[in-house]
Image 1 (tube, rainbow, N blue to C red):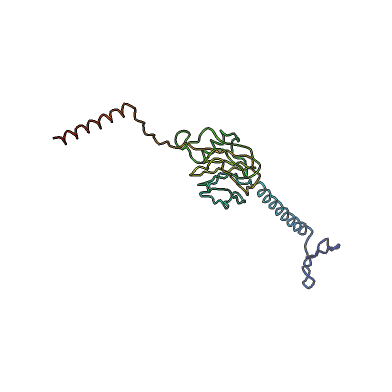
Image 2 (cartoon, helix red, strand yellow; image 1 turned 120 degrees about the horizontal axis):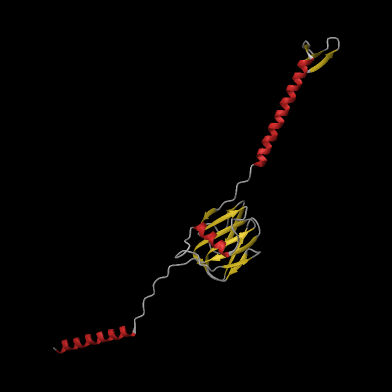
Length: 227
């Protein structure tokens, strides 16, 4: 659409195309049309800007604990990574990826973390022993001098908590690979087991009474034979 200004009539001639008859419009109408188009354009720009700001302001979801039952030693998912470990498949593992879990990395704090996630009692059978094996590491292969059935592994902005039904023997080499970020430390724990009662050892007096009873039975047997 083309506008031609007529100096004699002080009006704009609006030409829709070259073949159609020209249409005349006033200066006021021309200005109103221009303002309408400008307002529409500004409205679209503001709307797009608000949509972009909303998208950028939306926070990423907060990390949370995720449990994997029977995680395969050949690989299980942690975030966008596939983690392998060994030598023995765990009964379950909890993963927390994308941020450090609440609390510090002291053995006592990790003991509480493991107990909470696996729902262990604080005392008695099934509770974690207060003593633990721990160490700072920079590679994914390490050996723990004591047996354990719970293992916490900390890496950059993440934590893994393993549990085995049968404890891992002392001095067993453990390997883990494919972590999203570099490994930092480990904490290994043993749970309290139920001790079976040990049969009491008979006192010497008990043996004496037993022998006397056997002797008396022998005497009775001989007398019956003689009779």
